Image (cartoon, rainbow, N blue to C red; front, top):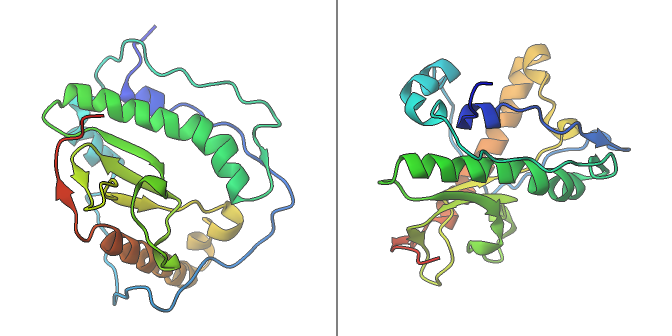
Length: 203
């Protein structure tokens, strides 16, 4: 049997989601989000290119690789984003990602350890425009109040809202919606990293 690797662990089949009574709904929007004029395709951001760059990490043998928990049908049945996040993402997907990030850092000891988790360990204030669902943090970037600095905010979107097939049926509408989401993420990234400073985390 071929040894497990970061790539093989992250390529495992996801738990089968079982949404219940979730209909279409508009995405969040705030007119105060930072704007931008347009976007351009990033042709080099492709799986083949990225794998070539990080082959030494993603293809390296991983002894005692992460073992995912078994989720029951009750665990994978949800009725809203909160249920999806806490019953599936927090129990299966996110731990696998963090285990892979830890393994990657073992192979790249000169880089800080990255960790994906909930937003509460970062400073986000009272402004609802900058409340992400998830934040990527590392072991050296902190805010003045000792909370982790958000390296990358993330948001959960159920397919009923995200409508991933829209890019195939109405490209302009799909682009308009994605620009709204990019405005949201740009605002959150800028707001949550102001005052960031570096120090070594002692765990």
